[in-house]
Length: 191
Image 1: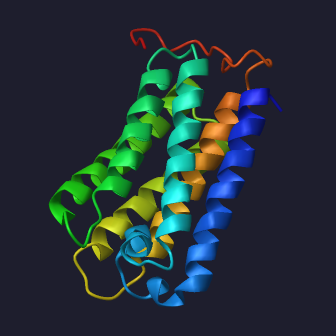
Image 2: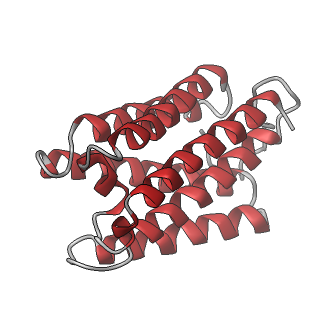
């Protein structure tokens, strides 16, 4: 495994453990239908919630600095980092419209980037499955977003786990140089 992929795997593990801590502290979040943002509204969970999102933002920013190819990947990771910080700084209980814009932008960018990575990698079966998982989880998240009760949190986690797995897979194809393996694009396309 490349150093960058290994670092992201360790970082994602810590992020998901912190989110699990939030769920263990306030299991009502599983049914509250406020998604991951639920945990940013309570004194008992705001620290692990914020730590998870800020650690994730730091991981994306660092990865964005290290990745050189494809050329859009580094800046996209940095934008995702900013969106994560924005989510922490705009609690949904106080600034819901702004919080929602940060969240929608993050998920949209992740899905677009994932689809592009799958296209660049000529529709690798596992990568394609991960993007389809992201797409379905994203649609289900969108479905549950306006509802009072539902499975928003669960679908957001499935989306993020799918994205994390795809990103680590793609970055692991590098040869230890913090660069994903360059895959030729079909004729008529470009980065």
